[in-house]
Amino acid sequence: MNPLISVVISIFNRKSLVQDAIRSALQQEPKNYEVIVIDDGSTDGTSAFLKSLNLSIKIVVKKNGGVSSARNVGIRVAQGKYVAFLDSDDLWLPDILKAQSDYLKIYSDIPLVYADQYIEVKGKRIDGTRFTMKKYTHEEMSRFDLPGFAESPPIHISSTMVRKSIFDEVGYFNEELKIHEDTDMWNRISEKYKLGYIKNPLAVFRWEIDPDHLLKPAARKEFMREGKKYMKLYEEIIKGRELTEREKAGVEDSYRRMEKLEQLIQEWDDGKITEEEFETRRLKLLRS
Image (tube, rainbow, N blue to C red):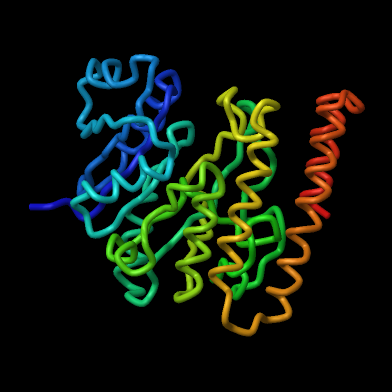
């Protein structure tokens, strides 16, 4: 009998972190799921390490192609009706799979459900949760209709479960995007459907526990280049229909923030501000 849920964990050179993520998936009840780990061409011995653990997981090794291609391989080999994504440096709390699969069974018109998350920064849990960082209306929580650089719903890949069938309708993760690929996916799904959400925090987002995180100094300019690519894709999604005032404001706000962030990165690159000043101003910009 096929599992109800397929858990997809993509990894590249994170063998020191992924064991925690895998074990948090394997603790879920009931055991109606499979755990698929996609090794995206790691060079640190990840696959051999995972095999040595003798865990109940399926390991798929592929040539390095980026996180989108790794997730897409996971989707294609998944046998479950539902696909749940977990980043290799994040964690799940007990009952996330049961809560999300129960939700999708009840709300048959909803293709995606996401849960609240605790947030840890450099190993320290911050006050509040992702859902409590801002006051959101039900309508805002149910749609990801704004660009990722605007204030969109507090959704994160490691707290999402999706009906596998939706990928046949909206397409797979865009393998041309190295960053912002999940945001692009939520935009595409939300263009056609409402999203579901669970207010209980059932995952832990571990920001910057990996020294190779997205906004590490060496990757900042790439983050902006990929952001511009993403914005072009977003404009293609909304092309041909009249935008709401909220969407218009979201587009303008996104370009404003991108411009300011790009200026900030350049100031840091020119040595005009310290790393601490960069982080302080970046966080202030995100909240503006």
